[in-house]
Length: 389
Image (cartoon, rainbow, N blue to C red; front, side):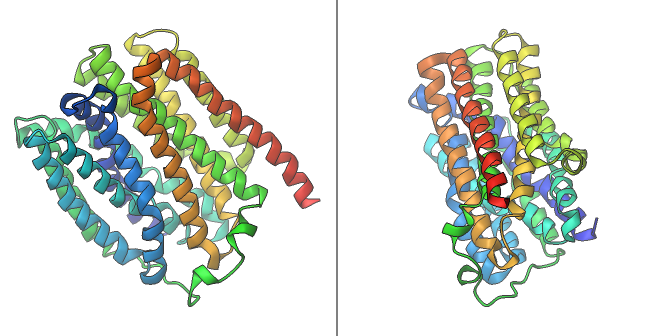
């Protein structure tokens, strides 16, 4: 792998720590500060809404200025937002936390582009490996992000305040590391006007498979993950430490398969990897329905992370096959908007579903999402055969 890919992997590890800490902090802070229990997951959900809102303008900026300056600008602003979050928590401001989470989500929309920058740094045959390599940064983030909550207690007695201080420092470090990466320059004068129309690109079976895999992977993961810390810590009264360990294990499991998922894709093919991800999601729900013991939560969330990796890496690799180089920004922007828009919807609805139909009802409803994706895979595989005939 080129040095640029490894540097981007390091930055991914540090920057994603902001997101993984927010996974733990969002639900707990929401439950503690919200005026209405049904809005307990709003801070975490709004961070995902922020990501969905940011992907199109971020990709447009990268199209005109290259990725490097946008990465630097985003992490500097993210550092300031982390300080705003700390101040909001210190003042028990629920809406301040919600605003901070939304703005951090905008910053994360830029971080999500790291995988595309890594893929652009290598030859075509190395794209699957580059996509999976850069996601290895999530292994560090899985441990470091939630641990920022514990380490932050040295800087503030109030839960999560010190964690956001440390997040601000990490994001500032990321902005400095971004100055060392290679910039991505656009070879065409205006990529948005070059190549095929989006209406043509989006009708390709490979595009539909790629986007649907990533959408389902993110949406279902977010639907269950967002509800888990709230249900465990608030409803089932598990300690923050027990809840943190489940979330850490889940996030670790999201990125650990990147050690071999690129190799699996080359051996099994992307469609089989996506199907394997859906099978893992099914096992997740079945285990989660077996009981409320800590081990059930842990096993379910670990499988949820593994399933997400197979679906997301498979979808990302497939997406690169759906566009030409001069079409990449508009296609990537559309993909990110659809993925994170659906994830935001799932995260926003998780708290409502948890209050309306409880944990078991939320899990049973998840089966419908898996069934829809299996139908899409079968339909699109048949259509692909016709498309290439």
